[in-house]
Length: 72
Ligand code: 9UX
Image (cartoon, rainbow, N blue to C red; front, side, top):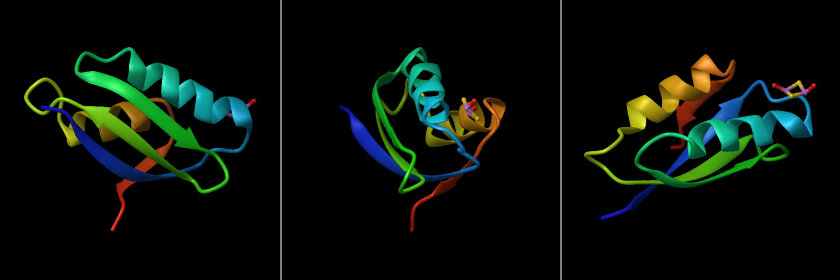
């Protein structure tokens, strides 16, 4: 069963940043879709709990060089 998580993502400065994050996340097992928006500094990720966790997703974004906070 898929879930969606919304994250605030800080540190993107050019359009290729959002594409980099989308591609990096899409390559992870358990992630079916990642839409990252540069102007709103946020993203929506569709994932399968049990295959990948929200913490794993945040860690991947951090490894790519950005901050990823749970949207409140
Ligand atoms: Mo643009 Mo972002 O040259 O990681 S790709 S700053």
